[in-house]
Length: 203
Ligand code: URA
Image (cartoon, rainbow, N blue to C red):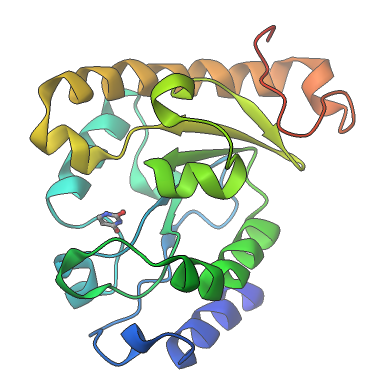
């Protein structure tokens, strides 16, 4: 798709943040170009930076397991991050870096038109619902513009904490259920049926 290739090229050329000069490769994201589900993580780590692909390190292995537990493969979804260059030493992304990269992510969402966005961790959840808490709202479905947001914990957190892994496994099971509901419920097809940021508890 021309537009997505164009976004990749713009990402490669971008020099807005200092981290453009310390990165090896930009990590624009990859996967299905007409996805029902888009997955948004935080930022590339060391392995992603070397390969130019999202979630190819330890957190990526967990993400692969979680996807396969609901019978999804990477080529059925589109996976990307809030920011497309690696912050040095795996530090958290800065607000300014997230702002600088926001246009790329917004354009990806615009052209890919997913039905549902699964946010991994608090950074990507707070792009859509800044006043909500992931610990409280994980595994729930929210409306944001014309897409539904489904927040879960970041898979890297499961590397350090086995109870998070269990919560992630539970929440991933909800992805397929939620997608089915989005597709079958006539109300969710009416763009204006739900208020912005409303939680779809009655789905
Ligand atoms: N963590 C992320 O948030 N994104 C990646 O691509 C890898 C690890």
